[in-house]
Length: 200
Image 1 (cartoon, helix red, strand yellow):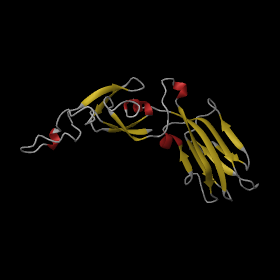
Image 2 (cartoon, helix red, strand yellow; image 1 turned 90 degrees about the horizontal axis):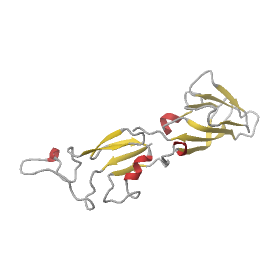
Image 3 (cartoon, one colour; image 1 turned 60 degrees about the vertical axis):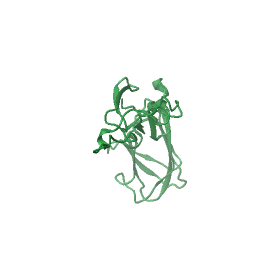
Image 4 (cartoon, rainbow, N blue to C red; image 1 turned 90 degrees about the vertical axis):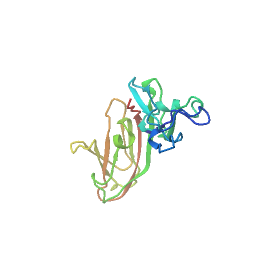
């Protein structure tokens, strides 16, 4: 998910709209450079849910909102600033809204447990996997790793050294991976595809 800031006017390109009355004092009308609590607008999000945008508001959502920011549009019509870009793409075609994440090498120590070494896929990346490939890069017969899927004690698999496990689209959506190193250290390569999730 990316982070955006609302700018309902860009001074220098669109001019000033009004003073911020919250910054007013006796003999002073307020500051035009501060976000005004009087300036709001409604804009339809990618799911056709209208979001009310307040000048200066910061919100987290998918990169649908980048189309309203510079350089995707010109400063004279832009009303969004991108603060953090997660690098994902947004397409009006739902099947195209996926982005890759690769963890390689991913270290699993002999002292690791499911509670101490895990990847919270939904919490970190915003959605479950559409595709997942885990490869044990170990080269010794003792470098096996236990992998717990989706936080379920009933879904624990052993990935032997040199082996690869693949979950294709439609097989299993994985929300969390947890690792137990057993008796020795090893490294993994974790490749996943995540569907873009939009909040509006």
